[in-house]
Image (cartoon, rainbow over all chains, first blue to last red; front, side, top):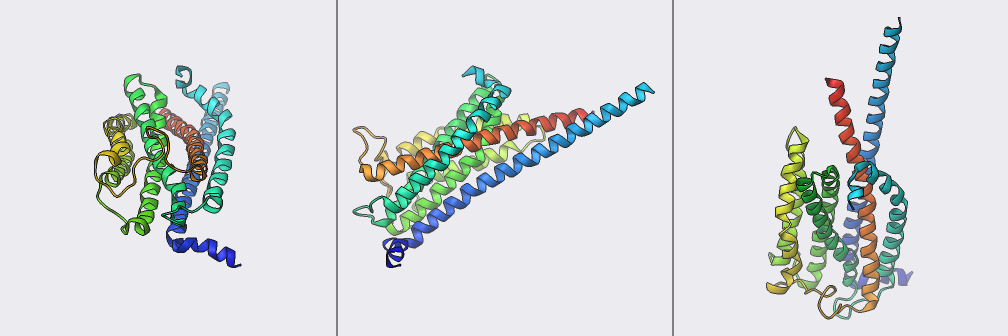
Length: 66
Length: 238
C-alpha cells in the first residue's frame, strides 16, 4: 500500500504528472471517438441514399413496363 | 508513390494497412507509456516530473510532423491536383490541432514545477502557440465556403505559407534566449539523453506516430465518403 502511495505521489509532482497524462488521454480518446462516429454517420447516410436511388430506379422500371 | 495518388487504390491499401498500424499503436503506446511512467528512472535534477517527457515530446513532434504532411499534401493538391491531397489535408488538421494542444498543455504543466511558471512568451512556446492557431485557421478556412473546392484551395495556401513556422519551432531553442531546454535528441553529435529515458521515449513516439497513421487512414476514407455523399446529393437534386 505504501509503495503505491509513494508511486502515485510522483515525488510531490503528482498534480502535474497525472493531469498532463489525463489531458493527453482525453484528447486522444476524443479523437478516436469523433473519427469513428463521423465515419459511421457518413456510412449510414450513404447507404440510405443509395437504397433510395435504387428504389426510385426500380419504380421507374415498373412504370416503363406497364 | 503516384500509384497511391488514386483514391480508390489508396483506400484498398489503407484498409489492408489499418489492422497493423492499429495493433502497433496500441502495443507501442502501452509499452512506451508504462515503461516511461512506471519503470524508467527519475531524472537526477527533475525527479519524477521528468515523466511528462513521454507524452510532451511525442505530441510536439506529431504536431510538427502532421503540419508538414498537410503542407506537402496541400502542395500536391495545388500543383498536381491530386484529389487525395485535399482529402489528406482535411483529415489531418484536427489531429494536428489536438497534438499541438497536448504539447502546449503538458509543457505548461511541466514548466510550472521546473521553471516556476506555466508560460513565458519566448520563441519556442510562442511559435508552438502559432502552430496551434495555424491549425485552427486551416480548419476554419476548409469550411469557410459553400463551394468546398474553394475552401480546400484557400486552406492549402495557408498551410504552405504557414510551413515557415515549422523550422522556426525546430531551431527556436538555438538562437533565441529561452527557458526551454535545447535540442537533446536530433542534434549533431548524437542525443544527450540517457538510454534509460531515450528508449521508452522513442517507443512512445512510435506509438503516437502509428496512432496518427491509423486515425488518418480512417479519416481519409471518411472524407472520401463525404465527397461521394455530396456528389450523390447533388445528382439527386438536379
